[in-house]
Image 1 (cartoon, rainbow, N blue to C red):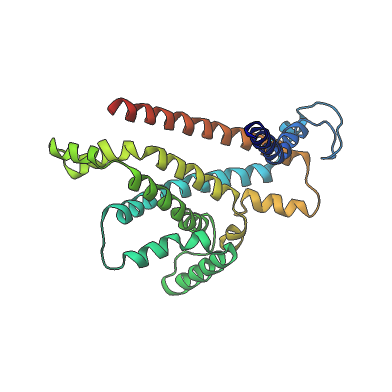
Image 2 (cartoon, rainbow, N blue to C red; image 1 turned 90 degrees about the vertical axis):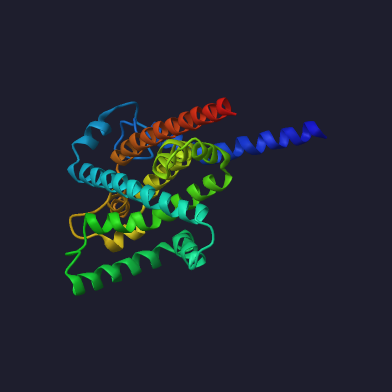
Length: 272
């Protein structure tokens, strides 16, 4: 009975991994395709990588998306960490339930509603205060930081709730001030959660299409918007090359995050 159960679990896991990663592997392979047709194999070639770097529209959109994702993820990590710290360590205070609901609302809110509400907000602010003047990279960063903040806050709050507070109490007994306590003890302990939140925010911002479509203006099309516009006319092999490069970047980020988490776990085990 145990052997059958093990065989079933191994088979299910194998089929699940094939279902998830077979399309990605096929995309990577076809990025080296010589043929102009995406789904027709014509031999090995690197010509589409060369064509990609010479495609000004795609490269401009890719650079814009990377810049927006980096800034949005950084802002979301700073604000989300503060929010998670408040919800986890400040105890009960008036409005805590409302604050928690406001922070987690973007997790369940449809992106269409979020994008439309932010667009109306920016229009109202422009009419009242004169800022932001039109829609562009600034409004995209604000919008992406808003919904990415929720993910970071939940991750950091969970990490703080599960963390052993005796380490912080020991540091305070040894004379650590609140400022030093946070940056020398608490922050290193929750760094895996912060890194995970930053990577998740970066990926969500880089992948977003719906919200960016509402809050972007002319000449500020992100990479998903450019790719989506090209789908109507047919995706070129250059998109496969771009996707392969992005997969490589994300893979390096994931490996770095895993290495940092293992290093942090070894440090905590040595402390124990």
